[in-house]
Image 1 (cartoon, helix red, strand yellow):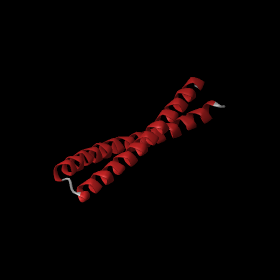
Image 2 (cartoon, helix red, strand yellow):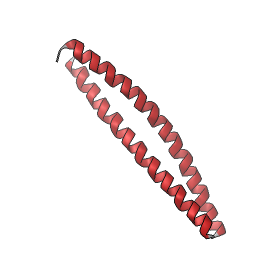
Image 3 (tube, one colour):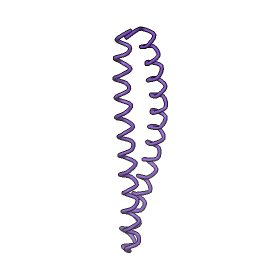
Length: 92
């Protein structure tokens, strides 16, 4: 691979990494928010012992699980791109 091609690919990877890291930061903030909401819903369900409160808690937990999966996917993509970036830097 020529040096200019490696440099161009390195720029692309770097740009994508910046974007994904930003998305990962947002996902972490959202996950923390959903986890707080789920904990609040759990406490409400324990105190009120109503079917509605239990349902709210289960829904909140589903949101936490979905956001956690999304965050994990983003983290995996970031890791893959970081490895790619390291390999490209080694080629220079």
